[in-house]
Length: 276
Image 1 (cartoon, rainbow, N blue to C red):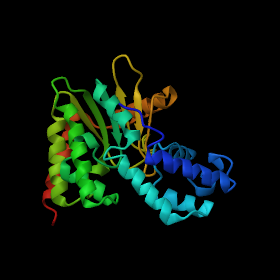
Image 2: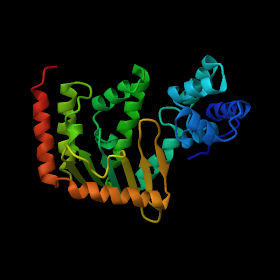
Image 3: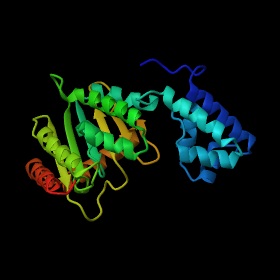
Image 4: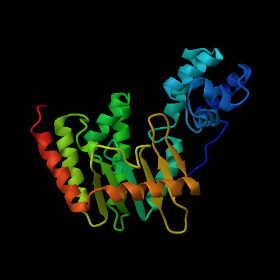
């Protein structure tokens, strides 16, 4: 994976400008600006280093706090995001870990995980997140290509714990949901895949958010965490250990493979009866 050239990256240029604006506005540290904006400091850090351009809401708040030309910085941010391509730079580290993994553990409390999504389900998610038609199609293609690790001769062992609510959350249309769950049940029947459904209702150990853990020979485990504001990829041992404990807890409380697959098929059939 080639390193980003800091002199030519639009994201790095934007980050430098945002940093200068922060300092000029009297915010001497990233923490003080983060507190003012109401976001985690890591959001500020990644924006200023060019690792991840700020989202629209972060940028708007930043411009207001630092008295910046919002339109100009919005154009710079759009250029930075476009330059990152379909796959953002920050995500490349996870893709590499995913490709090298012999075991992937996934906890997903809201949606069907990306590795198990159909194209139409994935497209519905991207459109709901605000992507335009053409970029959404490109992102779908990238996600389908990512799934090829499950088709190789020696695929990773995939262990997924999925909150039952994801089976009943309308994403796209009833037809999309029925097809998605039928696909999920088919993949869940493979020898290298274990899908466990955690019954809906009540608190559980994984309410803090979705995450994936990739384990590979000769390398530390890699953790990817998800939130509506920011995702993170790390090999920090303490964070990986905490995620592993949470995964064990939600898996312990989830249904075994066969009953889980039965619930998935049952939900798929129910979606088929819903009006389109």
